[in-house]
Length: 525
Image 1 (cartoon, rainbow, N blue to C red):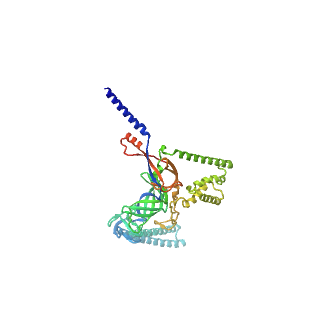
Image 2 (cartoon, one colour):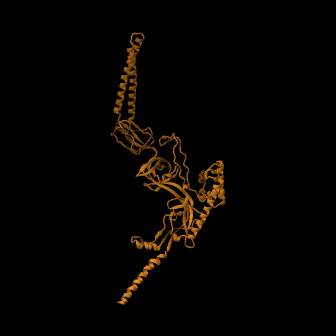
Image 3 (spheres, helix red, strand yellow):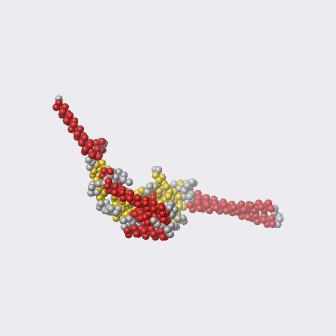
């Protein structure tokens, strides 16, 4: 019995020791595996996607202003018609009878008018010889004037009957193609309350337009003149191109989402596109070439604290603290020299220290790190200040310099391509409308406004992670343009880290967890 007890005790102690080892000693030694990616130089294109419908630039619903039976049809589906050609005929029988009735009524009124005129002349002659009373003369004059008005009314009725008879013949209002026919021969059309539609004619199918809806979160990025590529299901392997020509201000609510209609002009010389096709549209927002780009996973990666090089972080903090102290001293000096900070704006603009920081921030930092670029920055600043007689505030000066920088190519790479809107016609006939008023246009989208700051992580020789601060540019959702003086193409950056111990612990806690390693990190910004 004693031997059995000793065996059970020994087994229990070994079990406790093994559990303690796995729970405490083995759990404290975490091993991390990093996932890397290399910085690369390439191109970035940013698009806004939407769906739309292809339509003719101008389409007219041809109707009739008179009621009757459709006697003849001279045009059918896909008929090519010219302006002024007869395309349909309404039965004119009753309209012709209306013209005859109006003509007979006019003859009767003319006879009454002639009789009243003779009576007036006879009464007037007797009245001048004092052989007729004033009452009879006034009655004859009134009768003549009434018959004269009735004559004009009868003439108008005859003209109206002739016009209605002319409306029985339907003419093509524009040159184009009949894309829809609504009636058949023998069908009765009633134009009592609204004009019934007989045909739908599209003007020129060689020039089409895509009416696409863009939601309010993306409409700010759309500008007149942007390039558009789209595809249709009928030609899945072929890409069509167009240009944004109009951004309509009327909001359209679709399932509680506010959308705006964007018109894209399309050249359809090959006549492949047909009205009503669904277009999958991609609007080119920005395009950059030969820039340094980084995966977006690297910008979102946040390492655990034990992987970060604390000495590097501490040195960066001390550097930032020393810079902040100098800036505080300089601002205190300016306050003592100029009094109230808002009382003398020119003293702030002329302060060399205040503008030295702007040299690092101006134009997205593109002038930083080079004395020649700093001199160019100062030359631009001085020329703008001289042009405004030194009366610009700090904010106004930065705004003016921003305009200059946006017009200049990026010093660190190729600036995003932003095409200027094409000249819009102020007159002429567009969509059948004579434009006599200037057209409203929303402000153009400038991709340079997307610039910001972020950080990426690199692995040093000690196996720790060091932060590298970069300036970001445009992004396509997968990659982001960056500008950095310390990074170059081919450098490896960390995009994730995983711990085997934490992955095993997660598996033991949650039996539904998948096999493998659990990545570390989260939101970085």
